[in-house]
Length: 394
Ligand SMILES: [Zn+2]
Image (cartoon, rainbow, N blue to C red; front, side, top):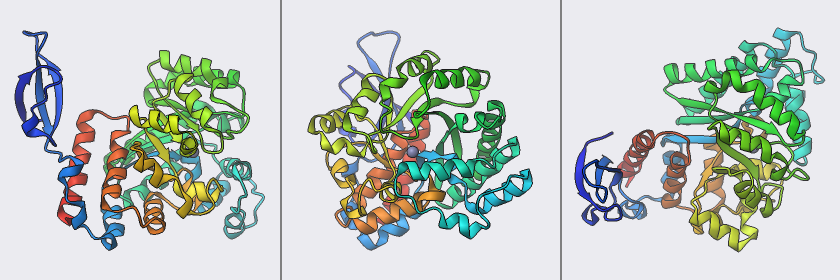
């Protein structure tokens, strides 16, 4: 919200008397040395908010009711067994599981690969445009309950193309659900096309070219699937092509793969966010760099436990990442498979990690907006809503 103009001065001389307020600087035409500051909202700085006044037992309620963005959700990973069975019936697809309960029971993975095996089996029921609408709509209805106000959805077109489903069917269906989420639930949503890293770069390049007729319907590209043995540099050409097209760039790195994969995602692929990235704690230099560059990490706590990246939540690197000043966000990854949606992830983290309090809760929620690919105005609007929730509680 623009509520007024506030002073003119050199670029590095933001009015000190208004520290804690948010401004967008813009250069005025009559003076190359001057910048006019537009006050965009009255967002208090972190230090201005009295977090100590918020007791820890109020956090679950606050975390649940606060507005938040989700930036790491694979929409195919939101397919609940009930919907898989419904779509299988509608499309005449035979499943290897006799019942919903049998399918749910098969969700006991031991590692990323065993999860991916069942993930691809679940996706086999998606054939028509309406199937993709229904899948994403089910996620949005669940996200609305968690007070998600913005979501950036990953989708895996190669999983569907390989089964003979046209990429247009996939993208149009998901886009239709995004539009409906905005109009009926007030959730802003966009799509990020992910390449499967266990396939070749040529396959990724062909997928990107096939998606170009629909490039107005997605905002960026990402890199997912099995990390081990598939370093980011394998996809340097396709990311360079996506960059030329003006798309946003993200990549999974440092989940099962080493910290070096995070570095090569930054330097080789030029990504603007790292998905997971939790193994950055193994490199002090990398930790420092990520903090200095304020590079967002989309962390998925319940996924990390389910896939045994960490043995228990108490061993999770999240507190160390926050302590180091990284722009960490909390996300659900594949919520139907990993035992929880976004609020479940927040609750599990704050339950297991007593060293995290109201300040960290606020920081994580605020980071979700700062790390999102939306305008500064949209970020300021949602951060103001977040502030209102925390201010009312303090
Ligand atoms: Zn993921």
